[in-house]
Amino acid sequence: MTQYQVTFLPSNQVVFARKGEKLLDVALRAQVNLDHVCGGSCACATCHVVIKDGFHHLESPDADEVERLQDLGRHLFATSRLACQTEIDADLIVEIPDHYSLIS
Ligand code: FES
Image 1 (tube, rainbow, N blue to C red):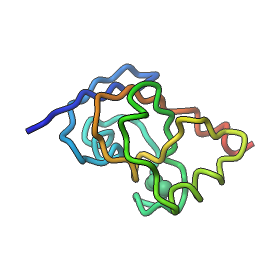
Image 2 (image 1 turned 60 degrees about the horizontal axis):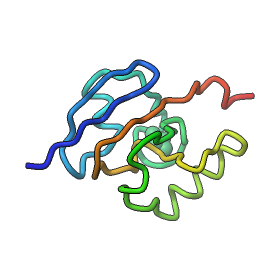
Image 3 (image 1 turned 30 degrees about the vertical axis):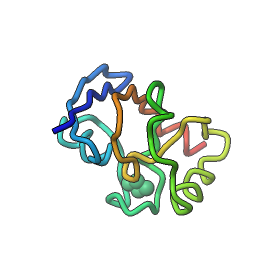
Image 4 (image 1 turned 60 degrees about the vertical axis):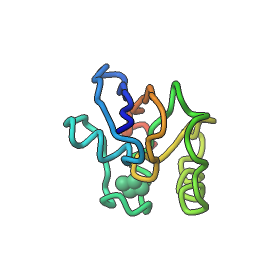
């Protein structure tokens, strides 16, 4: 079974994940503090993360994820993803942005 290493920033927590696991599920399993208000149904964007390494190995986001990402406005980065929609397919370094800044 293929296993990947996911490093969450800023906590620097390292978690091992199986190919195809959702990034949110991996974070929650490791008790990484990552908001997920809609429960992973691609309706809130509170699970926004920025992929610092490994982004180009991931499948492209579908139309629903792209739409939610657009809601982030100026907080959107070129390597932003929603953790609940992102299937792991590589070693990743993932930054969890300060979600309180999204409210401003
Ligand atoms: S948890 Fe709501 S979009 Fe991911």
